[in-house]
Length: 264
Image (cartoon, rainbow, N blue to C red; front, side):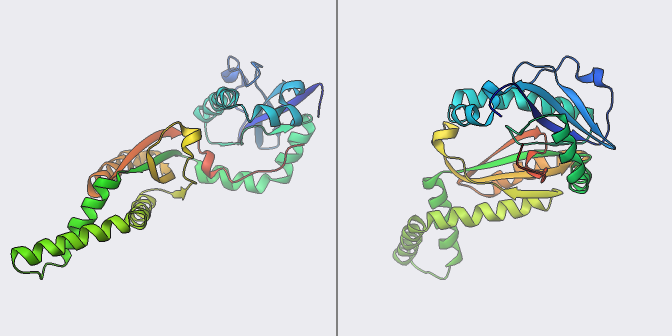
């Protein structure tokens, strides 16, 4: 696909709905979005110029962080508009097909997968929780806990040595301690969600932040349990000194779509 027009796939939903609801939504190329229907599944797509969005041009564009960010925002704007209409499965950025028939083939071939994904995300929203470590604060918190656990020491000198040993030990093990605490936080959050995943930690060169990230989690939360989930994040933020939690969302359920196929 090096010339002409390709079909950019944004999301798949379980009903056509009213096409007029998306009439003012434009996609990554400024194109009006439209629907491709196969039985009970509807793909929301846009026709894009392959001189920009074909396989070869995309390889170069995806290395341009400014272009990538702008395109991702436009893609997400369409997906968010679709999700507001009802349950939908977002497709990954730059899923481009040669024509509408190829999109229908995807819907037919992966009908069961799309059905399962739609059932999973129905009535639920994705939330992100990132954890950032403060080495000094985390070392102090771990040292205090270890010194308290060794509470058999008597006398000022002995107690001082115990605290000092705990501090040195905490300095040496801060990476491991951060990982252990991040895993505990993630496990607790999963208990308050329908599903949860730990994502790869974000490269500072991409995020633009130099903070020490120790947790990058995404969680699929029932819409009627949002308050419970956000309260849990607040509680865990206070419970684990040395790790600061940041809650983001709600987002379309990108992390839980679970349906991918090579475009073509």
